Image 1 (spheres, one colour):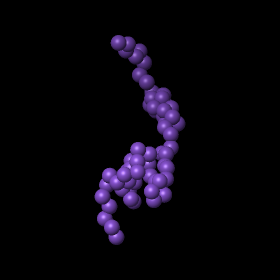
Image 2 (cartoon, rainbow, N blue to C red):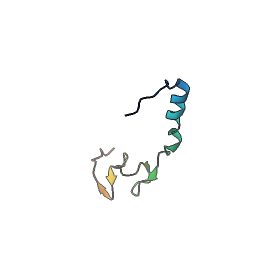
Image 3 (cartoon, rainbow, N blue to C red):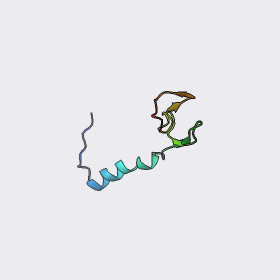
Image 4 (cartoon, helix red, strand yellow):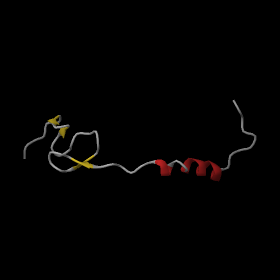
Amino acid sequence: MGVPKKRTSKMRRDRRRAANNNLRSAVQVTKCPNCKEPVMPHRACTSCGQYKGREVVAQAEA
């Protein structure tokens, strides 16, 4: 395994680490087909408790 001959400066190290920040995409939000509330994909709806058309989380009726 190679060993660096010179110490990496803080600026060079931070610039290298910051290069991947622009590759992260924004959080995707879709609408729940049941109640039309915004919900993240592949997760149960927090307001109605449904996922893929069936209830997976029991919600308290108000």
